[in-house]
Amino acid sequence: MDAIADRALRPEAAPERTPVPPFDLVIFGAGGDLALRKLFPALAQRNREGVLPEESRILAIVRKPEDLEGLPKQVANRLNEEGLAAEQVAAFLRRLTVVQADALKPETFGALKTALGDTDRVRSFYLSTPPELFIPICQNLAKADILTPTSRVILEKPLGHNLASAREINDAVAAILPESRTYRIDHYLGKETVQNLLVLRFANTLFERSWSSRDIDNVQITVAETVGLESRAGYYDKAGHMRDMVQNHLMQLLTLFAIEPPNMLEAGAVRDEKIKVLKALRPIVGPDVQRYTVRGQYGPGQMDGQRVRGYTDELGYASNTETFVAIRCEIDNWRWAGVPIYLRTGKRMAQRYSEIAVTFKPVPHSIFGGGSCDRLDANRLVIRLQPNDGVQLQLMMKVPGSGRLKVVPRQLDLRYSTAFDERTPDAYERLLTDVIRGDQTLFMHRDEVEQAWAWVDPIIAGWQEYSLHPHRYTAGSWGPSQAIGLIEREGRSWADPDLI
Image 1 (cartoon, one colour):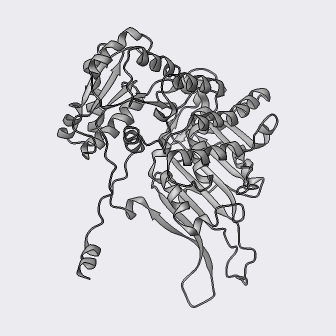
Image 2 (tube, rainbow, N blue to C red; image 1 turned 120 degrees about the vertical axis):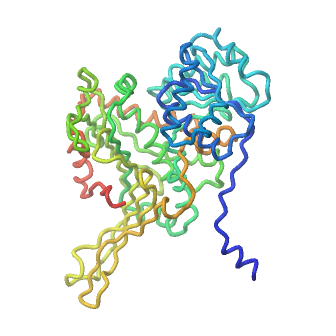
Image 3 (cartoon, rainbow, N blue to C red; image 1 turned 180 degrees about the vertical axis):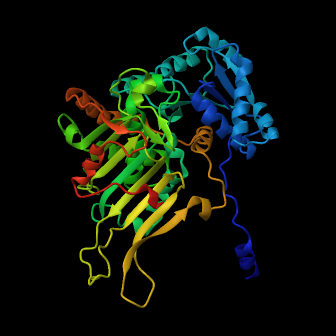
């Protein structure tokens, strides 16, 4: 009994981590925005926590000679901004080796081969570059005899710009590395709340039994950004929001929300179920794009008390590229038939947040009449990915008091920041170490990527065929009015982001 009491009084143990084997991580595009803003800080945090083995190294590939000395200074400045102590920054920089090489010049890969040396450590190559460089980098790694039996390649999104280009990349990479050593990364899958989707559903009888068209009225997936173009104008104007956000981030959130229970929490089993969802998505083709999709582009507006420019003003020229997309879609399978799923994502919106809002069907009959409540609001489950990560469940509750019975909606609120003492790691912290461990559960199979493109491509083609120009919306708003009409014509409304 004393042992039981003692165990109960002890603070909760830190979560156990699967060991990370010794490795060399090579980052192509090391001077780019993603590497400086996300990759290096994520690795530095893992280093600070003692997760990275002592002999492991990070090799940063740069093209310009001046970056050989300049990049470590940039990395140090970024880590200082992240709040790391001086000794932690210095410890990380000791792991960093900067190598000059050009992705398009195979003769320059000799320097990388020399830097890597002859070791049996796991080699991972992160391609933080435009997708058109994926094939030449992989081919040049093979030509230089740099790839080993344990080498892995990490491909950053977007994987191509349509189905044909995605297949071309996948085929070329598959000729060099097998699928088991190819990691297609979508950082949304590394977010703690996204991973918790699986736990919420498959570890709680309460939700799994009601997770179907029998009890759910509609689902809304929103990824709203407040930023504009920033430094991505060249890429973004060619891609647009459909390719940049819907084809990857929103498709992945949709599949994880809607999958059937896999027989085990293992990469192949989870991926198989996700692919089934993508194949069951009802196609939106031809004139249907006019009814079920909305394109938008932000104009000038006010954000945080500051006047901001419109999209074309930021670009400096006219463009029909969409910065906002809303879609009404359905999954044609036994579980989800008849449930509308609304997708919404855009730049320069009123707030920055990402969430999945599940609205359940109302009670079939209310017994609370006589002025006790104006209406019984439907139960709503909100899974907030960012910011204020957490889960909220809206229920109808009685107002305390002995007078007239009054019923109002109230929220059960679970925030990660208050429910757990542990620091919530950045998504890349989890994903980078998963690659080194050889765990592909949170990465995309080539079939997932290609099936997502197969659904998105006809929508993009329909916009071109029917000349659906983007609707203008004011920066700092919730998008064009047509997006509100998309959902309100069916008697529904977008979930209020201020509820969580």
